[in-house]
Amino acid sequence: VRLARAAAASSSYVVGVDVGSTTLRCHVYDKKAAIRGSSSKKVETLYPHLGWVELDPEVLWTQFMDVIKEAVQAAGLQMNQIAGLGISTQRGTFITWNKKTGKPFHNFISWQDLRAAALVNSWNRSLILKVIHVISTMLHFLTWSDRYVIASSLTFTTHHVSLRLSWVLQNITEVRTANENNCCFGTIDTWLLYKLTKGSVYATDYSNASSTGVFDPFQMCWSSVLSKLFSIPMSIYPPVEDTNFGSVDAEIFGVPIPIAALVADQQAAMFGECCFHEGDVKLTMGTGIFWDVNTGNHLHTPSSGLYPLIGWKIGKEVVFLAEGNASDAGSTIKWAKELDLFTSVDETARMARSVVDSEGVCFVPSFSGLQVPVNDPCACASFMGLKPSTTRNHLIRAMLESIAFRNKQLYDTIVKEVRVPLTNIRTDGGVSNNSFIMQMTSDLINKKIDKPVNTDMSCLGAAFLAGLALGFWTDKEQLKKLRRTEIVFEPQRDSGEYKLAMDNWTKAVQRSLNWYNQTSY
Image (cartoon, rainbow, N blue to C red; front, top):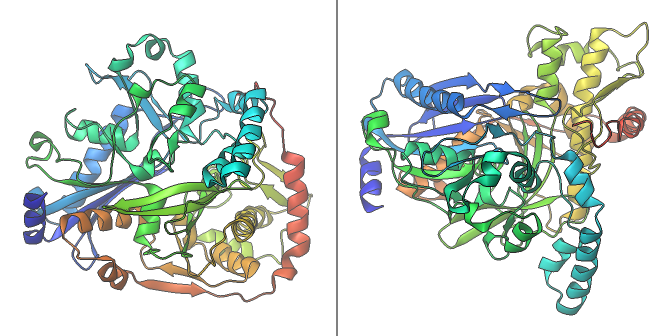
């Protein structure tokens, strides 16, 4: 570590990579956090069956290597000028592989994958879960431990690794028959670390582990109770670390580069936005929508579906977050573009403003079900209220409005459920560049929303964490001075003006629920 910090002090650049759901992006940052070189590639998603969403691990590995090399080259640098590497990854997307050969047993199974939907619904209605709720309620009454509050309202979703991993263990023969000590499980960060170090380092970090649904944030370890419940062997899990994940094998880039940070994408964006204080709020709108609140050293106890997470662990400091999410934001806009409803994403805000309203058309953004506070994996995406007079501008407006309405739902859930006063709201992600959605969201929640110059906050957050670990930057106060605001959206219309439109949209949501039966996927 001392050698890595000494090298970082003499190097002038740090690399941040974000493996997102739609884009794999790499930026090279200087000490002022200015981007000196960049590269990006579209993440190639596979849909082998209805509801199944996968990534080819070898394709992802090749793309990952390429964006780093291309970004460093674009910056006009050599690899030996890079102080260290920070890696941000989409959460809940996992793979299993043979420990001896390093060969994957199957493709990455995406967090958007719905193959375990029937299993999720079965568990959520099961007698076992009801018994857990009753026992946990009694234990909370006797002990007043927040741990039992969480267990008393425990529910499962398809986003969590837990039941998708259980599905893999039940249905993929190679995994089921593998010797427990010869089967490795990992989210994308673990797989990339394993590849970068040529198998010498097998680990994950606390932010990614806490996003799986099988990690106990109270004990800061993998949950033996949930693992037994789902028949997942404890030997399958990687060790959990906070910083210092070794170095990239010298044969890969020609020099050993310290891997100074692994972090889940939303937690990385939170760090990149400098939401370091209790009550700070981050709204990321990329493929999906993610609202995160810094709850300090208090682990959030959910009641309406917000999920407690570990934001980051730096030494002895552990910061917790509460999160609510919706799967479809950028994915909705991407779908509309593929249908040729518009040519450029930049057109959409203008198209939406070109009509007074959506003319009663409502869109339900539910390609991957509806999450908090609706929580229905079988809800369908739909247009309702179509008329002969409906134009593509009305359709686009309805789609953009639906994203703002989901923001309003999630914000209201946070206000109702989180006990800490909310302070700053900061936004990032590609969809935050849409001024129509941002202004409407500000109006609906009646709050200011700060958008930075650089909206690729997951990359920056990973770089910040790596830079701090290496001594490239000194402390969080220095990082705050590096973040730059581009625009602050302030409420311009009373939220009541949207009541009729949101009431109609809520009605459309209700009619889209439970559309698919449990065996559709």
